[in-house]
Image (cartoon, rainbow, N blue to C red; front, side, top):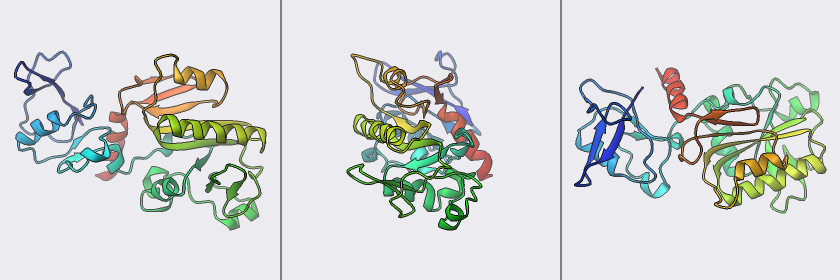
Length: 257
């Protein structure tokens, strides 16, 4: 996968470069599987690429739904089936906070790759205590009063000592919801560790560092997300990991060949 850089000239026309210093124009001859980021909802670079009559795919981390209609040769993280299981520790169960997320990222055809190392824990496995890979297969009720595990209102099974909450979008409302769930898991059900995986991070506050707040107050033991929105730079520390989307796309292309 080759990364392409872009900027606009005095006429607001998009120009493409091979390097981020904008010193060498990009040569589209024999190019394929291009990676472009830093769009921030601006379709101009994609339209510019379209004018180049490209006959290969261009990968970009994120586009708002209203702009995803322009996807002739464009693939985003929402349009591929990335292998996210490699970023989830083996001793973490995965919790989806909505039925929609569960169906999209685990139950349907995405499941074979998004969580390729996380087979569904059937009711038989739960009853027999056979856990090839721990998955919390369920969600909290709307009022967060009780936890549903494969249809049973019986809290968290003792095997689920560490849980990773999965969110497609890290908005203020979704993070607040995950925060409430994390507190309940620890205080009401005795879960030892709650981590957070966010595919797209959106929330930022001018008054304080949201990530530091969530980690400092021990709401989450560790947060894993991507740099898809450009809000967070790529990094990897003990409690915060921001994955480069280019790495996810490259992993995807390896499995697709």
